[in-house]
Length: 420
Image (tube, rainbow, N blue to C red):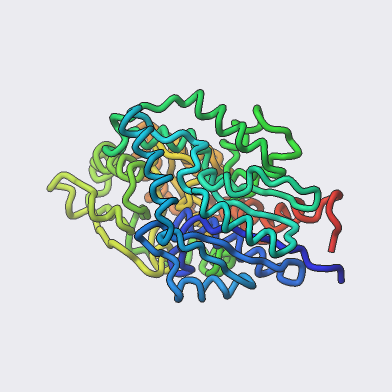
């Protein structure tokens, strides 16, 4: 067997294998790929603690070491120069210019972190450097070596994500020039050998700006660490015992708040008219902030944090994803697909994944139509079962580990790289 490919994998924030949200799930899914290909790869991980807030505890580092060979943490909280350097940018842009930080700012990668990163590169001979998120691009954007491939997994198009921030109180009064920042983003991405998008929608946007051999679509690997690839084969839809009609899972963020409130305010009353005992289960931190008319309180079950969602998915007739803003792939949608759940979603949410209205999901932005589609799946179990079968097939072809691993293999072991 040929020599293993050596990878330096950057960790954007501290993560735990026990916490599978959109961000964590994406990073953990990639680490799982490298672990499952450990006969082909040797992987070191690198991360950094923020000033005054050490996040990479010894326990979290030990958990990540289950999937990589070594982990190196930059103790940024000990570097006052980095603190002043980053905060000076924040003051200049947000307070003096009254604008959001530019997308190509090195706020998250001050000089001390870059030096730590470069020193690690100098000590070891890596074949690949993998960066997560544009905020950390400056760690590797200036590397030039014929023997080193630089890869960035953007997670989201940052200039689109920052538009969403304008709906958050902290950023409402800050200016943001989307066109100028998108151009900055493209210029930064062009410095990398490979750029990875996780949604078809964002790939289509970037494809107009980046060469085809540089840009790759790698969907979410939802299974990450917990074997969801097999969940869609666990209990056929017709054999499930339902406790809830609809399930919504979400963290407490602006797109989730707006989306679930749209459903509760405009669709739920119409559904309850047809089915007075209709039950909506809401899981995750979003549970603490939802509002509903008192007359509809009996139709809502706020579960808060649920450590194991598997049972909850299988006890729900269908999943809703009524989000109308946000960037990137909606992790909750792909997770629902892993459980072969019938889905009712919006055009915005569906744009990132392979959902087709009336074939493997219902997709609409109209409140009355949204209520009608949910009611149809509740009252037509045969239709819901057909959707379950179709969504299971879509998941297997697009998001199961075998499908995504094949796409990743093509990046690492293509014609220009020695195959193993």
